[in-house]
Length: 327
Ligand code: DP6
Image (cartoon, rainbow, N blue to C red; front, top):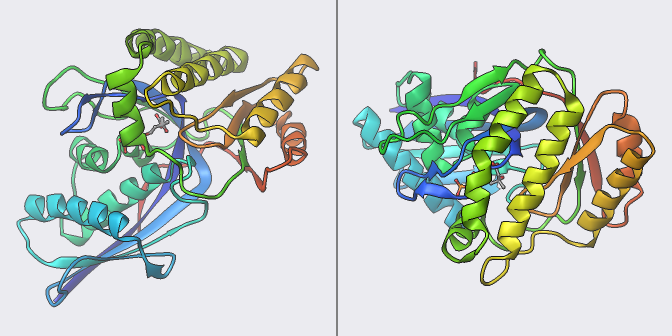
């Protein structure tokens, strides 16, 4: 017998970052984060449980996924099987519209889509807290992709993570802003987020200061969002991102996610800002530069980024919707 379901989720980009865990086993964040779910960074995933399958199989864009990826998905499916009280292995077919594992937050949409598709295929219709807990065990940023628009994931204080549940702060159509993404370098990132965060926690002398500033950045970002104050949100987001990278750089061995195009793109945005544009950068665990701006500045920002040597693609994202089950 087979049981199947498919789901779609969109990657989110954090404006206040999660970089550090308060519980490694439950994958609980040390600080709260705030993100924008993107409109067109889409992952679609179909999960088919098959009583006759000899093991879990993962196909990414039609080809067998690397073994490490298959094992990570298989461990995730073990959780779903134990929740549903079933034993069947599954075939996972997943497609993303953007480069995977390079700092474009693909794990966020990937595990949000996998959580929704696999639970539905297993006959479960989980409420948000339980679905978020499952998605979080796949990747700490994934719970935010379950919801659309602007999403807060509080760190919570409870040891079991029951108060680490995503909250929509503003719906996708509530504020018309853009994230212009300059893709550069398509290869896999040098140090994965999980490893990078743990290295920062264990070795960076700045890690305590990074954790201490988290709550203030989150409150300032939420206040700016509530006031629809783009310069205020942009300033917090840019400062928060550079602080995260300061922690990564001060880890031992140091973690450098940037390349020459990253720095050039940041300087282009700063030059545009000096000319009066309202545009602020954020950078995740990869070389791509993401620029928060209003709709009126997006074309100029995109043009400027296309002119940066090494930038291979420029995408303009709007706030997008949360995860959904596909018919
Ligand atoms: C820099 O969610 O990929 O994008 O929970 O270890 O899988 P794990 O980490 P992941 O890390 C995201 C890090 C970030 C910041 C953010 O999205 O908040």
